[in-house]
Image 1 (spheres, one colour):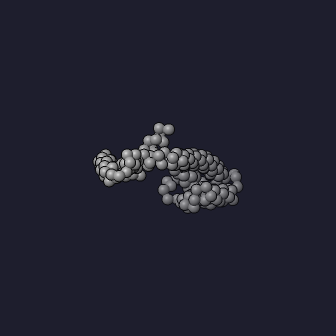
Image 2: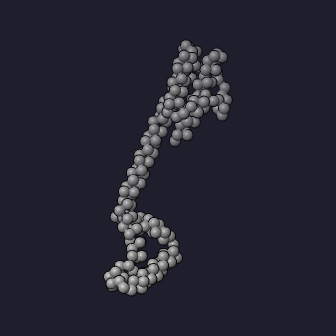
Image 3: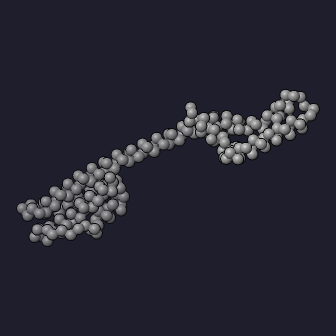
Length: 193
């Protein structure tokens, strides 16, 4: 209740434009002068009419305060609901980020397995598996993040050079392409942390 009264008092002061102490003194002084003028301007009126007329200028702030005491609680409720919705969205985003990071980690492991197959000359070349893996990762990157991640997934800039003991040219290129993509997945994980 204290927060409502405090907010209503502040909002009522804004409503009647009482923003500084000097403004408040000037406003009250003006109300006193108006009350005196109204008191003496009604010579033929009865005592209660004169008192009522003189009191009217002083009712501006109490009327504004009463109005704000009625209108502030729903406003505070809406603000709190919006704040709660924002916090829920942030928590959901954090959960989505975690799920995306976990998925990226799994895809890095699949890349490691594909690179191991590239290096194993006793196994058939994993070219089809690597192509299917790359396409699946790109589809999910586009769906969960955006197309810029797809372009960055393919980008070799910034990836350190590495010597390979793989003698077959086709396997060595495939290994290098998978390594670039794996490196970029690692960068994405760091960004989403």
